[in-house]
Length: 237
Image (cartoon, rainbow, N blue to C red):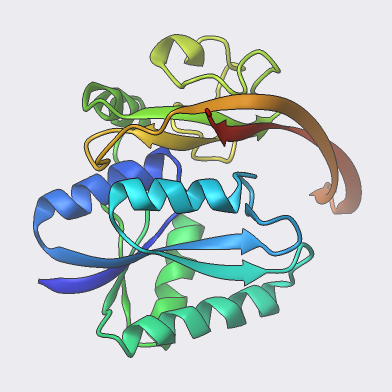
């Protein structure tokens, strides 16, 4: 059995890929690796609280290994931190890193190239599968996942904080990928076959934040303001 680290976001694609990796019997998962925004103690992009990620990992039964990155993090700094994490686990017998990516070719190639530098291999259990079928299979297995963040272009205030379902997808903007693979939305998984027990959680607040991003249009660099919804998820008392 090969020893692997799982690149963990806490969301649906990660959970389904972890389920596949465990079910294959090919890997011993040493740890779930996640990146934490050190300024806010929350998962980068998803906005989920660090302490909630700790509880999630405890209910799955696999240690959570955290890489802390600053709020404003350059690519160089991010790559340095991740390379150090990979080398840390390589020294402990890790040979593979498992990801939940589905169809983003550039991202897959980037991950493979970075891992090749440190002598490790990337594994993609969900690669090139149909995302509609993936979501259907995910839900049929009994997974439950709450929408924790998403672009205002794709989801509304009413949807953020709700448990993802095929019915909920109908209320998202046309063209939204069923698994949010283009970054349209993110989720936090709280129940399913990889869990010892279901987490008792609730969305206690919904917040919209705006970010300025640069994009190139017809050779010109323009600045665009994008809005994102975030659900503040907590354990019920």
